[in-house]
Image (tube, rainbow, N blue to C red; front, side, top):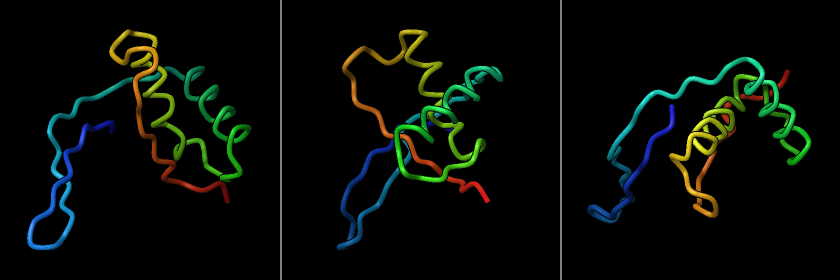
Length: 81
């Protein structure tokens, strides 16, 4: 899931609210490429499923939905065991 989040303070707590979300489908080769890049570019022992967000970001970048130079955040959510 790739989601744009808006953060604001409410009662002294930081609250994140989804503004908009949508599905992104990546093919197997993009998933494998993203996993390889994630493992080579970081010391994080991320699993293939944990690096799927990076594959989604690649799909969005290739489609033009994310402009060159635009900032994005990807969370690696699974560890290779």
